[in-house]
Image (cartoon, rainbow, N blue to C red):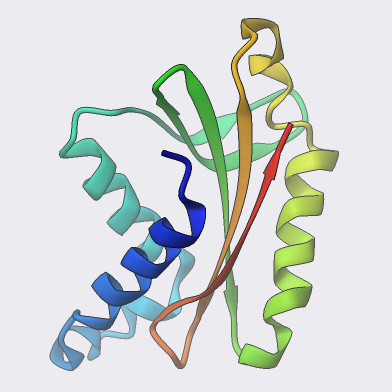
Length: 133
């Protein structure tokens, strides 16, 4: 349904439910914790995924093909919540400048660019940004 705010809200509440005890090894301070969490969730639904997908100009964190649409995710970690907007800008710029969506443009399908910023201290999603190309 392309409800990106709903997706972000659900992700926030899901991550907030992870017990504090599971954070003792500080995994939630790493981008890979969130990438793995999303990869596992999407994989359990038998969705077509391309983690760490290489292109001619770089590598996107995760690509999801769903309902004849492409969703390109870029994840960022932030040490201080005040830097969230800056990291959202960086993630979107990276996706555009590295042209992660270029390899899908000939399909005639909508391509969604999605930036997710996670907080080290907050142990969860701080904010998201979406753009359609």
